[in-house]
Length: 401
Image (cartoon, rainbow, N blue to C red; front, side, top):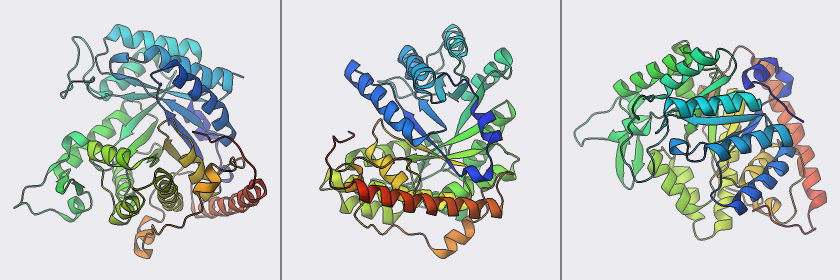
């Protein structure tokens, strides 16, 4: 059943009793078999009742047709609101027009506007002749040409955009806020300076002022950094929903590759947990579930409206996280997710950190009573899911991945 709705309208209609929403992000697979597997996965993941699913866009529109096709199938055949990524990379205005017209005609009313990464084999990003140079240009274009047809989401970078996270000189004295954003990659320390961070925040404000309805963040692993980012957004008058992007840890090498590429700050306890699990893919997934669930608990206590999961086109870890949170809508398949949620992992946050986070991310629709109801709902759902999982254990089913 088609569900042509803007995410901004859905969020406006939600009440405190609805609790936090979840969303899943996928990328277009490279092979026909991969596409078919993703289609099946979308059908399975619909049972989790995501508010929306994201489908990414290849550099220069390299996956544009498949991205739109997957969005149309998710929304008009499976019944999940779709959020289509759109980037400026190597995109002439005519190609952007075609993409936006195709989305509009298909009833895809949600766009995540991004600059995009350089095409494969290129280190530097450059605009094509007559094309846009940044996501702000794209937001302005969409609003100018289409008015209020689309809900526009944009990216936010709690640690600063990777392009402005630079090596720290040996004789450099950092400010307390800079110390809170320090990233260590292969033994080298990097940071987005306060001056660059201010420019990042000004640019984000410009995107919102130009018409963005929502912010989805880059992945992060330090919740305190996200909390500070939201505080800084609110202090600048950025009032739109800010949705944390949660990267599901699926593999040891993949975790290190992504955190190095994005220059992501990783708290010592999380790094230790991943290192302890590195000898086994299954143990890494177990660690990913525990780490992801702990992060999400802290974020929910802080009052985030929802959780946006970077799934990497997989499902065991994200379903495991939802089970740990009590947000899973159906009992997992015995032998797959259930087996991954048994190991205890010490990933904690101090009482002082929790006190700092309390009440800092609330939009106008969330207050203290709403947070308490949300936590009560989470606990109720957790108990129900544990009972359902216990009843399902002992059977055999095909693994999700």
